[in-house]
Length: 182
Image 1 (spheres, rainbow, N blue to C red):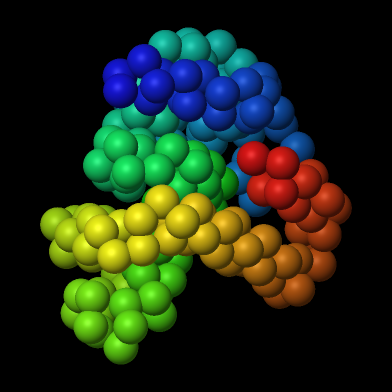
Image 2 (image 1 turned 60 degrees about the vertical axis):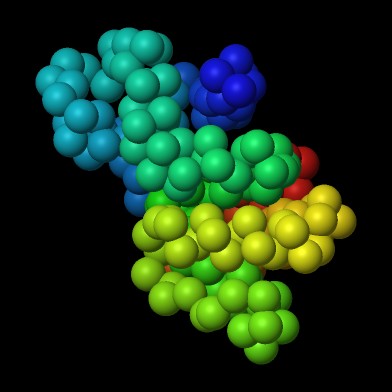
């Protein structure tokens, strides 16, 4: 599992690329997809262009992978973990968590499989237990469907960003291509 997690983080950093400082990007200055704000919260004080790769890797692991409980999810379905990881990085851990909780709620057969989750974005024991119960009932077919539903929700999320802020339209093609091709 550890090597698979490392491979997914490596793939994500590769997708994010190197240094970017686009003044119209709401994320601001980034290196390996890590925003300056996130880097500073993790103790980095240097120039963003010089952010060490190992620190970026560590931030992705701690701030995104572990926060989304992806070790638990990856063992059930790697594509679902990959979608949630990428979603968490691009749109925030809480957005990815809320999305999973919302979708699990509509797939619980009116609470016959598990009780509705609070859609707070925090993936704790209740969310993971609901995912396990969903997996036990729907198996890999259900998890594959869940992954595709998350992908669809991500697409809708990105489109809503541009609808609410026209300046973000210039990023849509790239964002949507990334999600579709993930």
